[in-house]
Length: 257
Image (cartoon, rainbow, N blue to C red; front, top):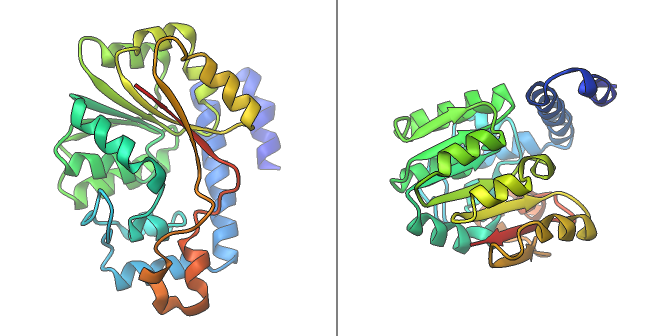
């Protein structure tokens, strides 16, 4: 019902408001499923065992807050294996850039993790709850001065931020990339490194990626078919494998430089 309401108001409200409502509804639905299937309670058990601290990966040592833990499937992030297939690309891009732009920052896994490495981050999220959680994550990790949290990223804002500097753009906005990355925006960011999570079918994704060809070197990578890090939460017994899962089916990322 709420999803139908969001779609009904889309033609009559600014895109930023529509996306905010859509993201809020999506998070509520996801969390209801996670709660009903015991994932949130098991995630809290993992967080308490790990003292709310990421155990491995590029952001090892980053602290999570209880709000962040109770708002998503947090286990892969705490294990340190969340989106492991893009870690090497992310780290290489961080090394080359002056600024990181994280569009769709969620709880701040990347925004706060990257700031802990000393890079300034401008982080956008349409969902006010995610902005609040990310601020808490930045505070507890002592990087609030490096994470500039904003609500809405449009093409004009993005083009302005990348002007005259090397920027790494990380984007995960649940299909909003289709509207954001117009030909004009792509031209303005052609000197940047990009990691964009894709949210369509293989054919949809290929059409989107085609927008960037000729200006970027492109690689498209798939979500791994196997989980990783379940041995780190073996104390959960038979629940370890499902808690190490990111609960994705088909998923791709575009890497562009």
